Image (cartoon, rainbow, N blue to C red; front, side, top):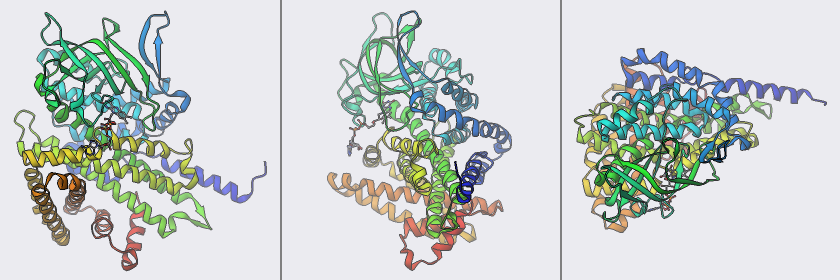
Length: 574
Ligand SMILES: Cc1cc2nc3c(=O)[nH]c(=O)nc-3n(C[C@H](O)[C@H](O)[C@H](O)COP(=O)(O)OP(=O)(O)OC[C@H]3O[C@@H](n4cnc5c(N)ncnc54)[C@H](O)[C@@H]3O)c2cc1C
């Protein structure tokens, strides 16, 4: 076939783009290195080589395997009978899925949780692995992390001994992995409407028979399910819900459930999400039965929400890598498209969003590491609880916008499934927005926490201390902006809490968005201060300036000529 000079050159450019996207996720990402140096402190020196090893494994090989298991024809499916005709409720995966699993589990992402105080490290490993859009293992890791923490904090000694070693195992082929089934057809936000029942097992204290239907069951292949259900005589609503550990198999046989079907989903497609009918499945209570909902929110969902944010950071970073490399290697009208100011504006915005999401997410992880596991500081716990919820919301939205931005940079090629990872990231990002608490549900919970428990006070106090610590002479105006924002948000919360119920419900989401912007600003400013004190020259100050102009001041670009140069500088590097 005839191929003109321009066609050949264009194919060369595409090859160069592909090479540029297959780098080392840790080495190429100076911002995450600085964040980790700051939060891990002296431990960075010990952990760097471990993270390097994960990063190497998380490169091109993982990418190719993930592409393979995400092809339509390789998605998971149900198997109803084993080779000898015995009925089973299994999920079958493409072999590439298991190859990916070995890389994920051997990274130590879960084993790092065997002792408290390693949330930042585990989060860093997750972030490196999460850049492939591989929900097939990202979601099981999040669910298993939640089960580990639930058992560590609420389990009996016997439960810890029985479950923790296999949940923490780094050997994929021997590991136990977990799922969490809460949502029923009548609603995921309104968990109090759960109708699944738990009937005490005669003569076996602590054991129950679970019956009913769960409507969204991700990780349908898991070996251990964490299930919410209510005792027959328990109060209505969330107060009557207990939490149960339900093994998939009892003595090798299916434990009283039927996998009705796997959902045909928009995103996270390589991870099986089923509808499951339980009928007298044997389960055991985990934690006090009357604290089921509290433990679900404070431990299980809390863990998933942090993982959700890490997933969003991974999507944003990968979108930036893909979009930036493409812009640098794509020519149109005789210019590399990265030279056009409108392309630079997209790249700069994507980079700013990525830096903000990473900074606030690792801020949350650092708060987790500061929490003493035995005597948890109630104020830090409360500040972190609010931070986790608003960060889940804000980072998930950012990942949708960010992956969409990168698709725009690739033009029509950005919409092609096997051209780049971006369509998958975009579809997964929308799922990140829905599960583990929709935006409105999270906002409603924040409002309840403020109104009934006064949790806005520790949340504000925590930020105030960070703002007060912004003492570097170069950060005078940054700190002044932070103080102004803090006063504004404090005033808005006070107004919200003195308003009638209807107005408060109508305005909470706007207030949460102002809280998110305040958090972004303070977190990025604190990071910049650390960088300045460490003598590192970075572009965090440029990211902050773009944040101020675009997110806080909403500057009119025609009246703000410095935006052009700012976007150009920020778009030069990733
Ligand atoms: C791919 C995927 C996998 C999932 N996997 C699991 C799983 O493994 N386990 C599990 O338990 N769940 C799972 N879920 C379910 C998920 O947690 C729920 O979808 C989510 O909690 C929302 O519930 P819902 O879909 O029933 O929406 P609804 O609760 O019906 O909400 C619909 C809309 O109404 C809004 N809304 C609800 N209440 C209020 C209110 N008070 N004020 C204002 N707005 C409100 C919501 O924000 C939302 O926009 C999964 C979901 C998806 C998409």
